[in-house]
Amino acid sequence: MSKRNTQQRRHTIITLLNSQGEVGVDELAKRFDTSEVTIRKDLAILENSGLLLRRYGGAVPLPKEITETKNENLSQRKILIAQKAAMMINDHNRIIIDSGHTTSALVTELNNKKGLVVMTNSLAIANKLQTLENEPTLLMTGGTWDTHSESFQGQVAENSLRSYDFDQLFIGADGIDLERGTTTFNELIGLSRVMAEVSREVIVLVESDKFNRKIPNVEIPMNQIHTVITDRELSAEKRQEIIDQGVNLIIAD
Image (cartoon, rainbow, N blue to C red; front, side, top):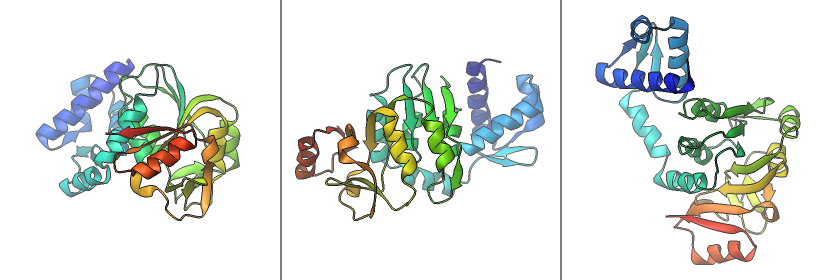
């Protein structure tokens, strides 16, 4: 079955779930004339994407309090930043999407991009990529799982990245220091630096309230950053500091 048909089936499953309140594996297999194994895979992917909860023999919608919390966490600023970032991506680009909430928001904006090759170290991002209509070629770094960042890190992941070259890296940050660069609470910074090394363009997606946070670990120095995308709350002074360093500044408005 084609990727398009697979995505149509999954969209229909969500529509049925919302209208009926629950769906069953055997019912769905008969409806789509496919195997129960295929339906269970569909439900697993939809659950990983935060669209439903699996139950024995089928699935139910997410509880209202969970969906409300998820929507609050994915702030409007993150969505606007992600939309600006997506405008920088051409069809058939080879990109890296680092783990993080803002970078995860970018995936939803890639639905109309064709022929993308996407490397990520995040299982959550990988699962979201699989739900896109124009499903990109997905590459995973592998490596050692880090529970703090919910991503793969370490030597294996770094060596995997060095086997490729990429057009763009899209990366977030816990903070950004305009004298030092992007900063993080996580001491595992090696992979982020390798991501920057193997990418022609480094694009940082960061909300304005993360500027000048006092965080000890520097990930990517300012002289390696090509573009910063942030929201309109960034002060005029900070905007000028970024531009003065030769970094392209995009304000998501």
